[in-house]
Image (cartoon, rainbow, N blue to C red; front, top):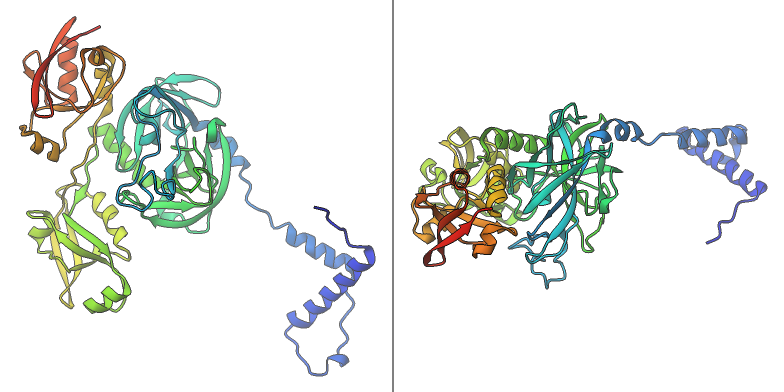
Length: 493
């Protein structure tokens, strides 16, 4: 396309007309006798200078952030035999692979082949302590047999997965190194919509790529991600950015880039980051306890729209409408009933129903909480002790140790799985993944439940590891496969 430059005469005429308009409309003077008003002469050079000064309103300079904080951003490469594709989102439009909207929400690790084949993937992460503690996304390292961290100075380290929390999509890694550069942790609560933010990561494997944008919204709720109040941004994020940091203009990390909204699989202007305060709480619990505990009410909630608000006698559509209450749950014991609307939790207003789950989840199980509810046309205040959320969450450090001997990873059984199998509370661990090794050659499969090793009961990954370490050559694993119990002999390498 050609661009036509204006002639000098045309430009002078335009500038003089622009100056006359500015003087007439901008000074606040109006008159019906416009012909009697003689505008003062405006020099063309002054108008051009004014125009240039306006153009000099500088955009943010991200160079300092990239130079100082980029050193603590790492490239993560993983290999294994796990599913490495984009996870589906059950119960949400587009989660069926045949649905045209299947790719709307995508986590953006670079995936390898699926279906139990050898896989390789790339992601990002960042160092939070000089001795090598690294944060990334759980889906980056999920199912990895080997995790390699590459620094900006080209040094590479094999990383140990200290712990993973799938509900928040946060994982903690550790490399054996000292005096590493670290990021500065910011405060997500102080972040404002419209602020500039910077992402550093490895999109499509291009290490330490810098992109920028603004915070588009806060406290976004995504399908099946109820425990994370996401930061929405318009920062360009693509596959390989997973686990990378989101910086504010002070060079502080305020989020972990985690998901994108896309129909193509690439950046389309909507990206989502896990708030750093959520990630740091998860990191502390994983390091201290090997798992994450979350508070629980035991209610099923839904959004309150204008029609529902009118029906229940509320002035405006706010709060979380209780659709059902679990039997013997903390909510039932506190007196919450279906049809109640939770307006406040520990003094914080519930504007949208999605505001409630993160507030409850961040509480320690057993801690006290106060609720203000709308009950049959009146407000009531209730006190209660929150319960503990049950979900799959395991310390994978011990799993990796077992994997090294047998070539498998295990996790605790969920209450539903334990009940269905008819097992006691301290009985059995689920085989989650199988790599090439002794267990695979003996015929152990994902989904098998290991009950005992050489006659000794197995109740945890730690117990399985200790029993395996005691043996030198051969193990007899008692397993439950469906409804059938059988012994499998495994030769240990």
